[in-house]
Length: 142
Image 1 (cartoon, rainbow, N blue to C red):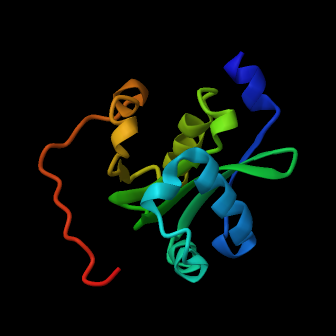
Image 2: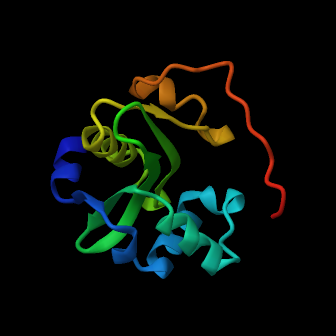
């Protein structure tokens, strides 16, 4: 069933300039990621997209339903900073497919991500291993 569902959708690497900020905001809101992203600041969200050099998108009948936003050197590491799938489309393999498309675009690079608390148990099921020595430094200014 998942492959049948996926076959009706489009997955591709896109330029951030080709994404409508309102569509991206809607996916973030409906995915549950909105509480951890600055959706109240559309300009900041646009800068986040513009600063990403590897963006995968999922569409259903031309409507954006998922996004994987990354920064990659395409040689060693890809930092997958956002993976968001509209809640109405979750649990159909769309997130996994977005990650596959991202990995395919940078096949020599390992993918690194920080998991949302609710998704910690998801990533081992799709091949990720937990890394216990990651560190973050809070932003100087919000």
